[in-house]
Amino acid sequence: MPDRDLEFFHRVATRYDRHWIQWFARAIHARVLRAVDAPSAVLDIGCGTGALLGAIGARWPHARLAGVDAAPGMVEVARRRLPAADIRHGVAEALPWADASFDLAVTSLSFHHWRDQAAGVREAARALRPNGAFLLADISGDGPVGWAVESMRRLARHREEEFAPSARVTAMMAAAGLAEGRVEHFGLYRLIRGRRMP
Image 1 (cartoon, rainbow, N blue to C red):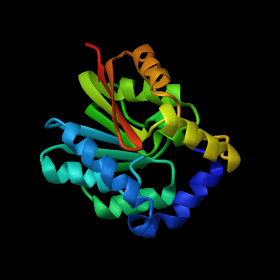
Image 2: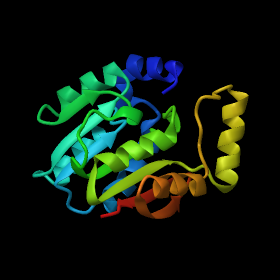
Image 3: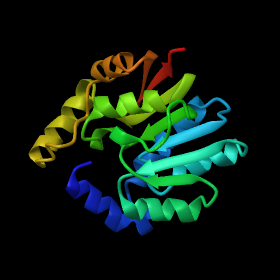
Image 4: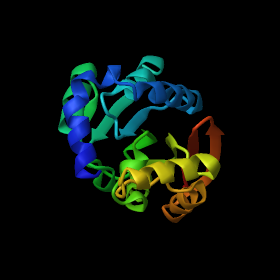
């Protein structure tokens, strides 16, 4: 995650659940929840304050919950929100869990911040059990939305972030051993699903 973004998320962590960004997050979380199928062990990569992880835990109370975030402030808030969850400070590119630890990995509104997206996808695949699912939800990098987002990013000089086209993301997934690579667009967003091959 770019240092500027890391500092922002650390600074706003205690009030992030009231931030205008939640207007985006709520729609994405709702779509991710509809795609989840009774997990037993869940990892949220870029978990922020733990809102999505908490919603998954409320729906599937027997699931083991884990989350990782690069912003220390977000980790503190998520730990307070979900004291029974395994919340760690770290980055997508070097997940601090053993191979095959989870049957579901999710990430929402985080992927475009990853410094090395392909490495992060490889790490998600590594942490999944065979047939485990990876759900990646973010602002779309395709078509007119992708063009508009990239244009705004360049004008704002946010050159470290990247809203990669879905075809590139699904290619990253395939290279990491994640099959399917199904893309679903909804409004300004997309949900890309992959499944760890046996």
